[in-house]
Every structure is written in C-alpha cells, then in structure tokens.
Length: 473
Image 1 (cartoon, one colour):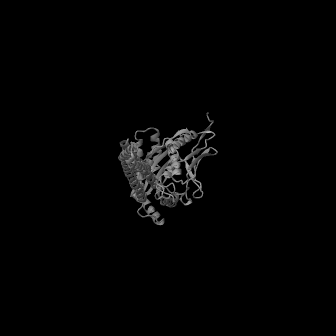
Image 2 (image 1 turned 90 degrees about the vertical axis):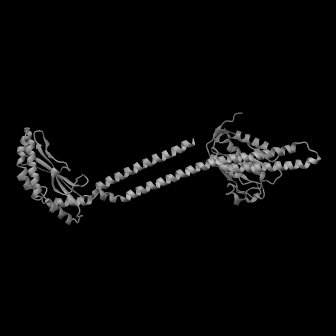
Image 3 (image 1 turned 60 degrees about the vertical axis):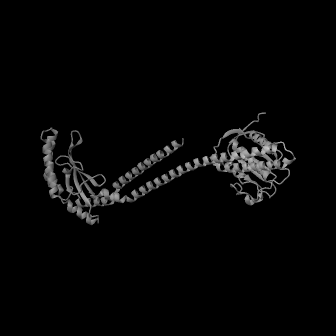
C-alpha cells in the first residue's frame, strides 16, 4: 500500500503540472491572438481616415480613375462577351487586360508619397510599411442577377500588388477593404485593400507580452517548487510516521516485558507463605508491585499521548443510555471502594453515533480525575442528562478539589497541571485525552465556573444528530 501511494503521488503531480502548463500555454496563446488583433488599431484608424480624405472621389489614388477609364473599362465589354460565350481565349484575353491595367497602375501610382504624407501629418511611426493590393474584379450578370468573378488574387499573391513594401497582409493589419462599382460601359465592381504594419510585427507583440511570459514562468516555477517541497515533506512525514510506529511498538515491548516480569515477581513474593521473618519481604513486595503499577500507568499514558493521533475512529450508532450505564458499571467494579458513581438514566432511548472506545476513555479519565483530585473521605461523581431540542449533554459533577478559574482555559493542554493539583501524582494528560477524543467525535466540553474546593462540573455536548425511540422494556 505504501509503495502504491509513493507511485501515485509523482503521477498526480506530473499530470497536474502538465494540465497546468497546457492551460497557461492556452491562455498565453489567446493573449497573443488578442494582442495581434488589437495591435496598432489606433494608428490604423487614423490612416484610414486620412487616406479617405486624400483620394476623395477618385479610385485608389489621385489619377487612378483615368487609368481605369483608358485601360480596363474598354476591355470589359469584350471580356464579358467572351466569358458569356465560353470563348477559348477568354481567360487569356482577361489576363492580358489585367496585366496591362495593373502594370500601368504600378507605374503611375502616387501611393508612396500619399502614405508618407499621412505618416508625417498624423505623426505616426516612420518605420511603418504599407501594401496596396488589388483583390477582385467582378462583373454583374444581369441574366442570372449575380456578380461573376473575372479576376481574384489573395493577399499573399503578389500579382495583385499595386505598391508598397510590406511583405505580408493579414486581417489584423488590414486598414480597410473597399469595393467600388460603376455601371458604364457594363456594371462592374472591383475590390482593393490597404495593409499597414511593421515588418517585425510578431517580435514587437512578443516584446509587449514579456511581462505576461515572465509572470507565467514565475507561477510555474513557484508551483513546481511548492509541489516539490510538499512532496518532500510528505515523504519525510511518511518516514517519520513509520519510524514513530516502529519506535512505539519497540518501546511498548521493551518496557512491558520487564514491567510485567517485575509485577509477577512482586505478586509471587506477596502470595507466598510467609512467617514472621518474611514479613519484611512481603512488605517490600507490595511496595515493588505498587510502584511497578504506577510506572506502568505512567508509561501507558505517555505512549497514549504519542499514539493518539494515529488511532482510527470507529463510528457506530448505539444507545447512549445503555452504553453509559454499561461503562459506569465497569468503572464501578474497577474503582470499588474508591468512589461512588451515581447515574440518572434517560427517559427515552437515544441512539447516537460515536466511537465506543473513545467514549469509554472519556468517562474513565473523568472518573479517575474525580478520585485523584479529591480530598473527601466519601468521594462521589454524578452523571445526569440534559436535553435541549434534539441535542443532549451529559453533566458530570464530582465533590473533588475543583479547578481554579485561571486554569480552566489551559486545563485541556497536554502535560498541564492546575494550581490546585499540588503534589498529586500524574502527568497532566487525563483531560488532554478527554478533549482530544471529544474533538474527534465533533463534541464539545464546558467547565462550569465555581469556587475552589467545591468540586468540578463538566458538560459534554454531543453535537451530532440523535434519534429518539420509545424505550423497549
């Protein structure tokens, strides 16, 4: 089982780290796409407005309409007829017309000077480059009432280039895409685009995203370090837990064996037939037995304090009244003659979820303390039930020396001994056990304030839901 846990943890960490890395990569990629889409959008809008004002009612650039009218428009009727009649030389004729038209546009274009004027007037970055591209020529087919494409060139197709040095046109650096139509001599429509960008656009965007990259990298590094530290601590804790368990088992064996031997030997000395000369030996045997029992009790307390956190809770649903009565009967037999245990039974049969061993230890420690910290000749402890709605509390009152008000907050701390304890034997673990078991059960304990020497009153509140049934006689 342990090796399985050790194998699962690295796999869990590796899988989580991979998912996290993919997620961060996805977020960075989407951030890049957003930056790419919105990059220099302000400059592009200013260029678009300035360009529209520069060309006014002309086509593409000042003087462009004249080139259309003298070079392209005369070819359109003939080209249209050839296309409609599926003439064999229609494509060749159209290609020759478009090449002549585009060559003349390139030779006579004034876009370079217009773009420089716009950049200067708008105070834009002088390293910006542009690309003017002729995208499409369409002729209206009246018979079918549709626009038929006669010529088309993609943005990366240099045959449609009119002017500019920008190497790549994309949707993100396109300033505009305009369509212009005319009816003479036949209805036609052409589309062209203007692209403006930096040649090193991608690198500029990456530079702007450096803080995002660094922050993401820092997050990954921190997560890796924390995960590694957590894994290392987990491994060390497992080793310490295994070592602790082995140590406890070893100590129990090594201590219990000689203590048991001492107790058996002392008991043999006491039970043997003795004469007058052996009375001293018998008395010494009783002393050895008593001190060995005390040493064994202290040892079990210390071992219990160390091993308490490793105990597994075993929750069962039981009749709280019957269980309490059974436990107190057992404790009455154990402490016969030392204390009187009084108990008032419940009217209803109440079932509650608890750990029977925990509950026994709680009551045992409270009774043991009522005996130990009690100077009365007739020692007494009384258990009574209190009910409020569906919650039950157990009231435990003894006639011992009580607990000083100043000690009530710290009395449940391990190895803490109150001011009134004096020279009473003990390690200060009894109420620590009580509080630890109650915490595990989800219950609460309260000490009722009182005068010193007037005894102690505890209230144990059973916090989980209980169920009432009619008592079965």
